[in-house]
Length: 140
Length: 157
Image (cartoon, rainbow over all chains, first blue to last red; front, side, top):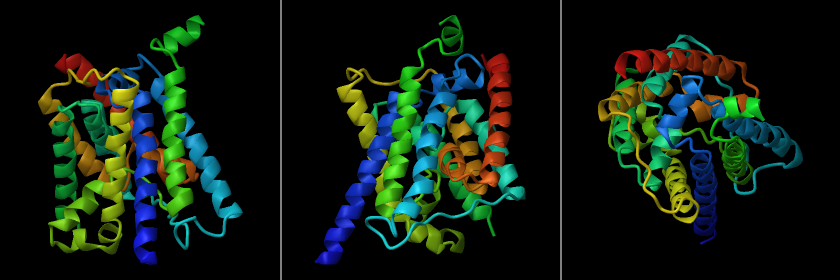
């Protein structure tokens, strides 16, 4: 019984966090491929403010939370992990940029945009899912 | 004033506030559940429900696939709240051709998963935890994205 209620609380918390994320993506118009492409073509630097605003908040909380709290409110430890730099990261990031520059859609906005009725994004979503599938099938 | 207009022809406040909200969502996930919420992993972890191949059956996908889907559902819900409550309910649409969304999306999915992160994973979470590899990933994808977007504008328009 206690397990069920903590799982439910955890799921609702995750949903609420996602909701804020999706609301922010929409409010900042990052769910519009045209706005992202405008940034990539140096017509509007808005994306830098979005990124900067988000990184600043996250940096503060990622630094402070593990110092101020023994553990997260609903789990027994913080799940931070180091990122790696190797050939796959370099190649993957380069290919990601090519795709992003071609369509103006990255994973978050591809998902969130559906909530604002932009059904065309299903094409991008299908492409991303397919790309992830092929990557996994080719991986050792 | 003129500088801010030429750098941000559509205004800047909504960008900054939106970014802070995105960060707050990521931070809330961390404080409540201890999880680092990049978005691209959901595209691998969800395949683990149906693809038996060992790569997709790794613990990091199987153990996280449920919450990642809930997180993704939250994203859709958040956009829905914005759309109905703040944007007057006019349906969002894009003039980017369907083939470009599909092909671009393919590279986005393949690349993000090969490189273990996207704009939110390496960008927001990675930079937010001051990881040098993530900074290098961000600089790499920004460079190829700038190049591709400008070449595409010239050749495809």
